[in-house]
Amino acid sequence: MVDGKPSDVFDQAALASMPQASVTAAAAGEQAGTWQGVALEDIVRRACVASGDALAGRALARLVRVTAANGDQVVFSAAELDPDFGNLQVILADRRDGKPLAEDVSFRLIVPKDKRADRWLRHVTTIEVMDASGS
Image 1: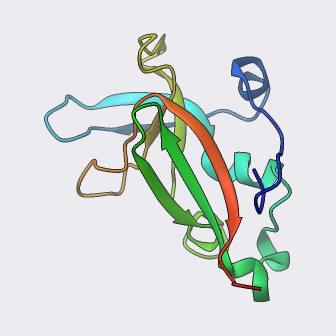
Image 2 (image 1 turned 60 degrees about the vertical axis):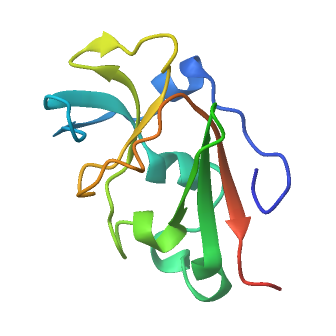
């Protein structure tokens, strides 16, 4: 969803056709692994969210909410993900060490720079872009 309106649906095939990213990282209590998938910033940009020079003014109030099957949610600002601002690397992973994730996980959000792994959601089901400007 973009600002409460239905948007693109990204299934496994659509995500596989997008540029792939990888990062080596470990969540607390896990061994480090190489996670592969699509950068969250690329997904957000595909959903028609301004980036680069166009990410200014009201567009800076856009939020990206990611929801897991168990109802857990995390939020990032569009600027936090944009390479010209925060450049936070976040990956929607579907593989670890070259192998598909377990079916009960399917997609996992990987935030390698976080000191805690609380935003490493398992079984991501929805990514929404919302306008928090109040206008």
